[in-house]
Each structure stands twice: as structure tokens, then as C-alpha cells.
Length: 158
Image 1 (cartoon, helix red, strand yellow):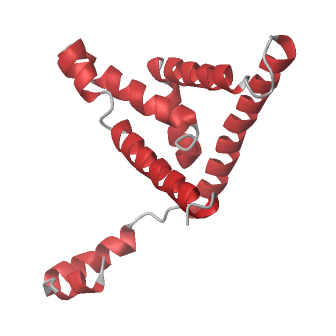
Image 2: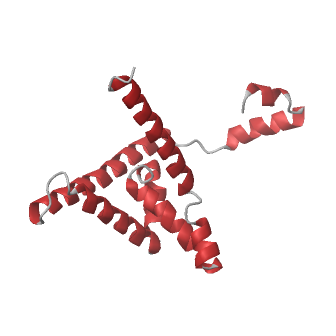
Image 3: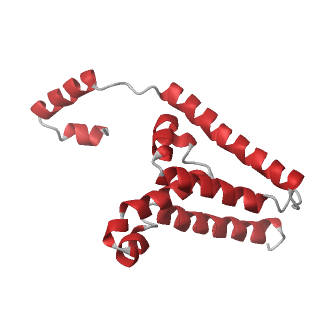
């Protein structure tokens, strides 16, 4: 809590804050970081293995094998979300599953599953990008800004 908010607390509230801090469970931050790193890395290793499989056994080049790789990872994520496995896996690994494309697919599929009882249009259609919408908006804005900077400064616009 910021120091300005602490100043506005009554003595009873301040004593409650101290009591709460005493009994609050300490988060294993280092352990959570290691889990996220390992699980996120394993998802990336799986993606790399899929990509190698696509250009080794199928008629893809190394450059074009990325598209079916991403599609496969998205399909697996949505399938595991539908069966309820991905959420348990994500709970264990934390941010490790949120960063790759599988986390984005999970957020879209989970919102669709949660709101399916409200109907396809108002339920699924209206809520499917509730969580993922902000990622799309800020990703698009960031891509635009980076492209603008690259165009103006790196490619000799100025």
C-alpha cells in the first residue's frame, strides 16, 4: 500500500494491516519464476519440434513451417482448455503459459466456454474477446508505433 494511503488510515485500520501482514502467506516468487521459465520454455521447445516436423516430414520450408506450427499450438491449447486440463496446467506454471500463443488461445476459448449458455451471439460473440481484446488493442498499437519509428528513423525518413 502506498504511503499516502497509509496516512489516511485510522489506527484500527493500521493495526489490522499489521495483523494481516503477519498472517499473509508469503509467495514463493523465485520458485514461481523458475516454473514459469521452465514451462514457457517447454512450450517453446514443443513449438520448435513441431516446426522441425513440418519442414522435415511435410512439404514446408523453414520459413513457411511457422504457420502450421502456430495453428497446431493454438488447436492443442483450445482442445486442452475445452477438457479443463489447460487451466490446471496454467495454475501450476503461472505466467509460463500466458506468454506464448497458447495463453492467448486459452483466454479466448475460456471466455467462449464460460459464456456459451448465454447464446452464440450475445454470449460467445459478445464476450469471446473480453480478456484477449486488450492484448489485441495494445499489440496493434505497439506494432504501429514500432513500425512508425522504424520507418521514420531507421529507414531514413528523417
